[in-house]
Length: 168
Image (cartoon, rainbow, N blue to C red; front, side, top):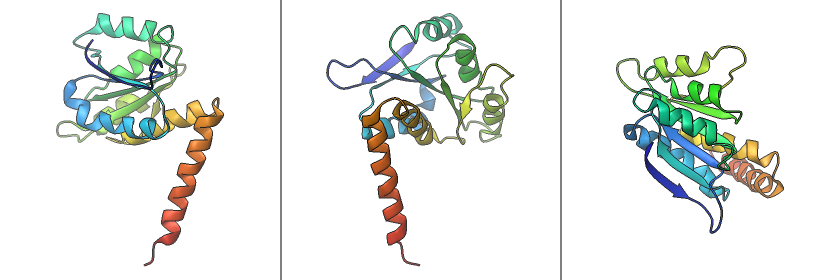
């Protein structure tokens, strides 16, 4: 594990882990932080590679719950093993973000993440759409936190109003 970046409220441990297989995924993965910031949810960004740092990835996945995380967002390109490997090692919900790399433009990553075997689910968003991963994490947390749920309701109402204002 390397390159960690944490954003959280004072005296608050991050509850969402945002991990990626390489720091080259950061331009895509940083969008996951936007809805989390909007709803006041603490998070931590870090690089954890299933292929280059497998021991550290295992340690991260096995300790995530005891470290206070409630949800993991995992982004990866190519073979995209990171979300599934973390899901296989942790009881926490994992949201996979396929990252577009190479000639397949993320299709390989999408299929790798979405085609998990029975018993090892990974929620999956569209290629490069980490914003939706952050929003989904917020919605999951909102099911158990009325303050977050209220913020999400306001957000959805604002989106509705924006659409209704549009004139074609």
